[in-house]
Image 1 (cartoon, rainbow over the protein chains, first blue to last red):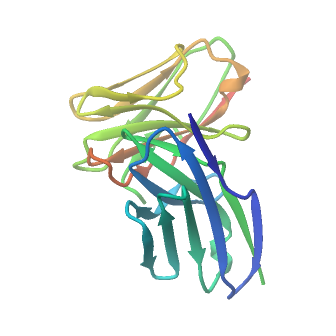
Image 2 (cartoon, rainbow over the protein chains, first blue to last red; image 1 turned 180 degrees about the vertical axis):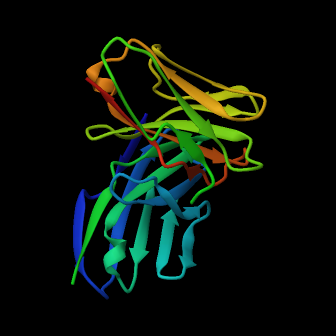
Length: 108
Length: 112
């Protein structure tokens, strides 16, 4: 079975940093994706981790620990447009299993 | 714009009916994936096709079926519709391996 957990909601101030944690227990694991989804829109790709460690991409960074079944997405210098749902997804055998998503609200 | 197109954008129909959702992948992508997103279930993987053949199957109901055509576009057929089938249906495409999936804008289905 697949069990992927993320916090439901987080709130932060414009310009701040927010860390979204994701823990997973899955029957297989090839890699972990993070997607951003604005309400009513399609998910858009943010990052992909296969190996342990930190991947940095501009204001967004993602970390993976395969031994701990743990990942986080770090959003720096928050902007109002970053208000969205952030989805953690485990890839195995060409299938993506998604967490329920974390809704991030950025306040001025 | 991801390059993945889906039609129609919105669909309103009645219980018991049958609908077809259409997806065209990004140019060069061989894999097409279908997902269902409802408020209470999150984003659920339904089925994947690679170059015309079914490759992976998720929690797809027997009332639902899909296919990928020689030109690589795909269709998702939903039959004997129920109220609970109301959801956003997304199509995604990738090159074929364990690669990033790019999502289309979705079809919003409302079953009345």
